[in-house]
Amino acid sequence: MQVFEQLQALLTGHAARFRLIEHPAAGKSVEAAAARGTEVSQGAKALVCRVRISSSQRKNVLAVFPADQQADLEAIARAAGGKKASLASQDLARELTGCEIGAIPPFSFNPELALIVDPTLRERHAEIVFNAGRLDASILLDTEDYFRVARPAVAPLIRR
Image (tube, rainbow, N blue to C red; front, side, top):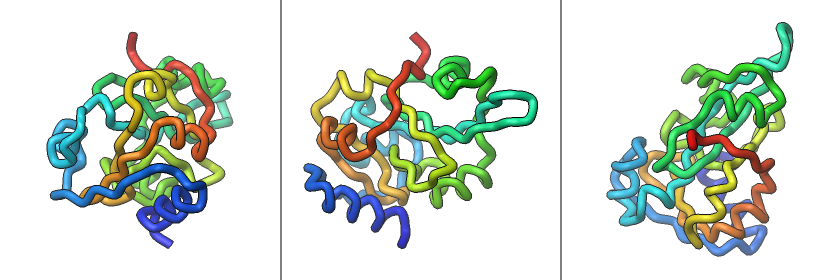
């Protein structure tokens, strides 16, 4: 099953309040918001990161935060219990998520990819929006339903 279908099945199965939005392909946050007719700040940006825990141990993290903010790699490393974080390669991101960069939703369907969300995502809007595993489809989702269904770890991840 593709991520697009997995997401809809997961949300439907949990009786989440969501709406599918089909639009021209857009991978950048500003372009996607314009195509969707939503605010950039409603976007849930998902970055795949590699966190160094020790000299021999790495952890994969899906860091999620409002799309109008910038990730803080040091904060992501701390949140994951590590020393240093970097963005994953395009190939590793695709392997871990099943999606192209820009289409990655704020959910992890891979046990090797820990989900950590910045708390400001919960505080700003009643609904969040994100690409649904494809660049031409997004999901507008009730924010509280997102946290209930995704059950992420929550920690500061953005530049303050």
